[in-house]
Amino acid sequence: MKHVIIGTAGHVDHGKTALVKALTGIDTDRLEEEKRRGVTIEPGFAYIDFDDGSRAGIIDVPGHERFIRNMLAGAGGVDLVMLVVAADEGVMPQTREHLGILAQLGIKDGLIVLTKTDKVEQDWLELVVDDVLQLVKGTFLETKQFIPVSAFTGEGLPALKSALKILTDGAQEKNTGLPFRLPIDRVFPVDGFGTVVTGTLIEGSVKTGDIAEILPSGEKAPVRNIQVHGDNVDTAYAGQRTAISLAGVKRGNIKRGDVLSAEGELNISTAIDVKISVLPDSKRTIKNNSELHLYHGARATLTKVFLLEANEIHSKKSSYARLKLKEPLPCKRGDRFVVRFYSPVETIGGGIILDSLPQGRISRSETALKALKIREQGSAAEIADLTAYELGGVFSNEAIKKRTDLDKTTCDAAIKTLIENGNVQMLLQNKYISERVLTALGKESKEMLTDYHKTYPLRAGMNIAELRQKLIPDNGTAEANAVFKALNDKKIIRLSGNNAALPGFSIEYSQAQQRIYERLKEELKNSGYDVKSPDELAEMFQKNEKRDFDQVLESMISNGELVMLTSQVYWLKNVYDNAADMIQKHFIDYGEITLAQCRDTLGTSRKYALAFLEHLDGKQVTKLHGDIRKLAKGF
Image (tube, rainbow, N blue to C red; front, side, top):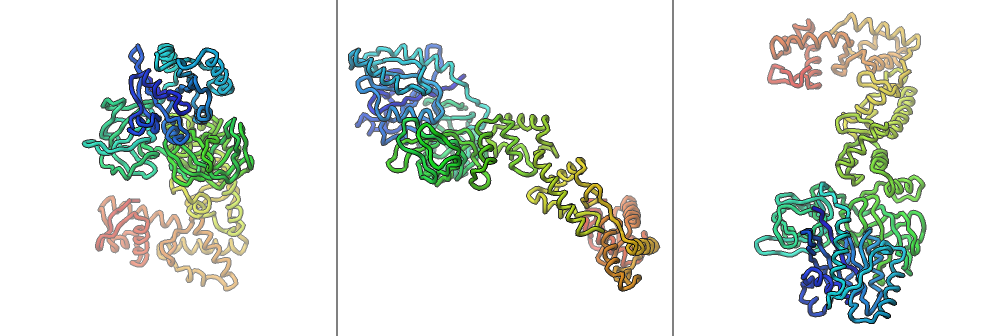
């Protein structure tokens, strides 16, 4: 079933509350002060039942300028609006202000209701109609229905109810599959139920037993009970006025303006990137670095405005901007907001959130503005592509979803599209990278390796751990290795063992170094396991060959020809592999090994057997238990 909220808007004492009561039989003035003064202070809630059994919620918002904040708190979840104008007064200041607010909140449909028609003559009524038509010209209500009514006599009410039914049937159905979100506009205790919060469920659905997160505090609480229009229900859906009791929450820990949400679904920001505009009939301007009141959902806070396209914007003008908020704001890309002047307090404009978690400093650069334009006008795939590039490394579906505020289904589909068109590459399960980022990393790694080969011409390449730390320090080992494999597949780098090198690189010894290399290799080959220490090997050469010897030895280590067991014991790779094979076979036969058994198996001395076993311990192949070793991770 479709769930729709109809809101009232208009000047104080123009008959909004009386109209709602005439339509629904419900008096939305519930506060004693409201009844005494005859003025709506807090938003009131009712529902209208249609002949086919369907129902729509109605929010009756305050019209007095002193209660605009309360009006904004109620208007956030409205789908359709009744702009109410009293026939005996016509267009008044809050009529204009409310219409401007509705436009900033992104409300697209509704109608105009001319109330108190029983109090005026036809000639006056026609003048008021002309006045209203001038007011709505150029707005979303310009072509909408205009219905004169009298709550006192009942004239026009059937036509109004019929028109509301048509609008309700045509309203866009909300996505109840999203994680739920409810801006809280009331908090109160109820005996036997604990703390109760109310608001319009603007996204998703919530059921009893769900765990709700209270934002921005982050406190979590189970949903104990749910009511919609006073009836207990198991589940509430987007578009319904909802009351939720929360178990174990102290009233002081939750307040109006907070948001009740599914766990981990909303960003909480003290800065947001937006498109901000000034109302068409505003006499004021928004200046760069100015301070304004910001209204979002049921929350109000102070904000500082940093315009990115101009130093000042006038009526009917807009600009990209970053808003620095005085208090943290739970929000999403696409949310609407209203801003009011700081002093005197009056509505000046509003806009739409484009980035709920902006990265980097404020920038007026062409690149920054282009990115905001994509976030404003781009498709889900374009926004995901931009975000994948901005993340600058390996990312998951969850990371993209968090940064873009796309729902899971849309986000997954966007990533699939980007993979298909080659903009994103899948590296591991649920791990991806932007092709633009991969290209940039390839260029950077190429520059690093070029410098490395110049500095260390006799090394086989840069150790992968070192390259990872320099190139992508914020990614884990598995993700970084996947990046290096992708660069290797593109032939940008060449992986060999634990080293990375340029594809065309090879070690080139001088004639003197080549002679040292051949003699050194022959010595180590003949020694087998019982090798000389580096100092003893160095004594085989003249003093003037010391530098070349050190470089050759380091080169043989870096290219994997030599395996270091300790700082004093180096084995040729084939000797090491032979020892590993023999010890592995011993474990297959016996399941454990002692130092003496290792010594006898290899046919070497205790010194070299111990060096090898401790080397295996260090690689977590084996583990020492008393005097014996058993396999740990294994070979």
